[in-house]
Image 1 (cartoon, rainbow, N blue to C red):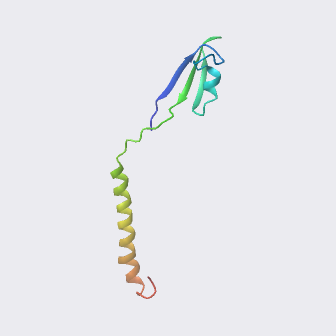
Image 2 (cartoon, rainbow, N blue to C red):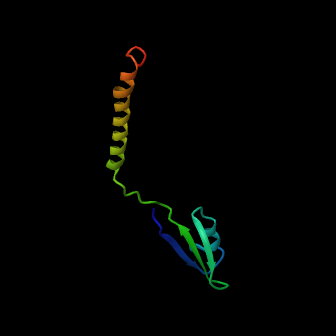
Image 3 (cartoon, rainbow, N blue to C red):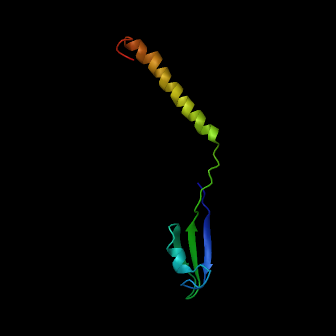
Length: 89
């Protein structure tokens, strides 16, 4: 899990022009908390918007194939020997 956070220091409460201000950042869904340093300076912490999935895809593929192997092994080696062929299809 990525533990990094975005930290933004703002000096104004409302938006003015193209600069993001505290009110807009607090309204975002990835807002974590706000720390007031002084009357006009605050630090806003945001969670990361995107997570980096760097786990290899072939690892998930191997897990899926092994689970299928164990299910088929149980079905054909255990269930088929316990029950006759006409009961189990």
